[in-house]
Length: 274
Image 1: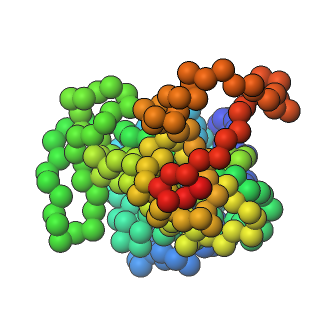
Image 2: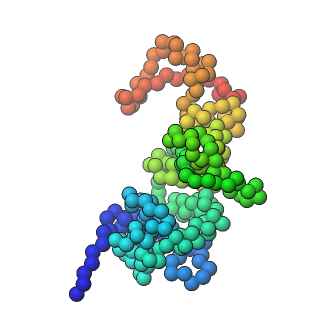
Image 3: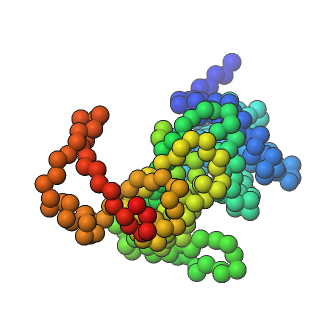
């Protein structure tokens, strides 16, 4: 009798959570497969999640090799073998996700999970990051609704590489509630407010929500657009005169509940909002 062993590791928890939240059913309902392929789109997306959280990220054409030492039938479903997880299969699913909308699909998953898993939405953190890419990229076709891979402000300091931006909103537990890819030259000064407005529109939030973002959100136009009914917290630019004056003033700071922090409270009007 031949016995072989494969490593399940922490991926069993990832797979089990994927199944427990019934994410596969939503995906297959939203983007059903059109032909008699071995893998459903939900199984392919699950495979990509396992690879991304496997601490050993692989290129598309290496996925079969990555899953060679993993119990694919246990993780992905009966009859699914490593040879089935190839770049053609992955490409078909990625095309379907693009056709439906990456952000739209993610929002559908979040809304489903929020109905079954109670987690807080009292504090939402909005931020962006960007990823550098190697290779040549053609200019975006204006007739297609696509982002542009182009030069922007690199957070990895690779000014020589083109990039794209990822905008994300997480709750106070670090659970992502909204993601959107943007062109590589997208500016935080405009994207942060747009992201906050989108999450207000797309998610049904019962809690009193505070939106936390970096200082790029603090401008006359942004504060006016957010309006008086949006609660937000940010760091104010040190270039603003009122901030400079406070920094040069000996004020009495109050200690927070967390002894590592202290604060000084002042009321200020900026952007026609107090």
